[in-house]
Image (cartoon, rainbow over all chains, first blue to last red; front, side, top):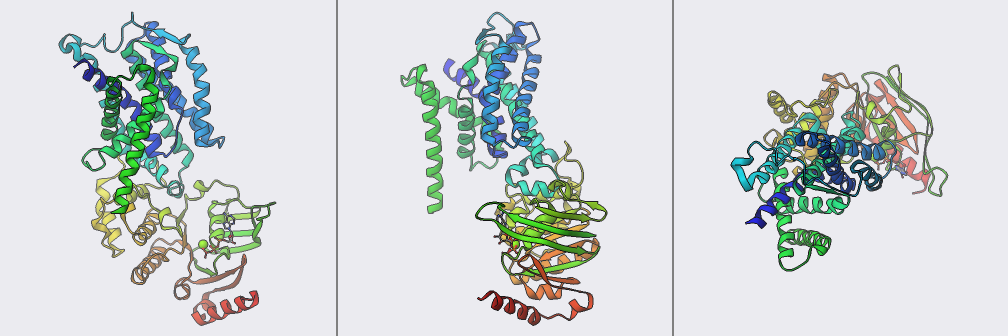
Length: 289
Length: 257
Ligand SMILES: Nc1ncnc2c1ncn2[C@@H]1O[C@H](COP(=O)(O)OP(=O)(O)OP(=O)(O)O)[C@@H](O)[C@H]1O
Ligand SMILES: [Mg+2]
């Protein structure tokens, strides 16, 4: 039971990150490595502000905005200075590492003794052990609904068009670059929000918590989209959220078979590879039919 | 209306692959003109359109539309008054979005793409009516992803999308090349109607000599970056497909093939 709860909690926290990666990877077709640093950025911002006594929910908002700024940086490097997409993300990621350290003040910042979004929840007494899961669920739901809404707006239409056919966006007399920047801003804001929730749930910030975040995000997106491809009644955002939970479950199962936490990244990578290979096998079958 | 002055276009300048497509190219198009452009493969037709729209930088010369000098202006800004259908059918529409979403996107051109609803439900009937003019049954496929339509269907939709909002200029690059003969005929008729209805100035590149002769009030034949035939008004009306074929043959002989 405790394990299931923990899988759901972790899976749903990473689902917010996966929604961000869905925007860059699936919609914008932009391999954005900023993620590895914008995730701990959200955590650092939340952790330090919580120790300073700011309301934990307000911390989430500040983390969200900090992530937006990180996305904006990558966007400007790519669009205005014409640096390749992959490199733009790497540059921001690298610089953010130091900035994250500056924000938190040290590589490891525990917040065990401070209030957080779970401890100050008004429903805490009613929900008991499910309190944490419930709050996380609300955050994911809010992120999903806002993203769904946004993708149906005119601005959202343009965002979907730019990854698909940039020429069309130009023909509509809109600057591709601006649209891409908007996408990166929203994506990294979500990733940073995810990091903020993660740090409040585990009650500490740690500089390396973002290492491999992009892989977790990508794996979740790819699992979600492939696994629920045939379930056309599911919105892609829902599929991505489910993908994240499934992925977390796979990792947990691998660990329960005796792999130690030291092997975490090994499992993460191997699972991601497995997902990609299985995805390709599926494709192969179809084209042969 | 449109003027290209002393245009110079060199691809891969200062490399072994250097290709000069235009050297001192001049073209002037009057408001309301419907210009058909023909010419062999590689004669520079698409390059000329790319230069007008700013999709390619130029090495010299000026581009003027109305009283505005467009030289150096960003491509996306130029499209404010220009509609364009590309030679490649996949460039005019967005494959992962539905037909309705594509139409809605195009319908909003020139306005702000803000946080309002992407699709205005009140416009759906109007979109259906527009699509029915294509005679392809697309009015019943509003909720189908455009990527699932055929190349020809997409090209037809691209024509509608490019002319949906007020524009001064319409650029068509072999927009019927991917269509079957009957649909091509329908699309050509529609092109003519749209150009007249909306009082648009149009440049249409085509390899179909019949269309070049039949449509438009001016005909230009390009060869090696020059307009070797340029007929308008009465002269254009008198020109026949055979006259053009003669010229094509003459060029081939001169070039030794
Ligand atoms: N991006 C490019 N880089 C280098 N050379 C190019 C490029 N685009 C066009 N060219 C060259 O410019 C010349 C004109 O090409 P263009 O595409 O304008 O021909 P076209 O008249 O449109 O031909 P078609 O009828 O085949 O469409 C060709 O010799 C081509 O090789
Ligand atoms: Mg061409």
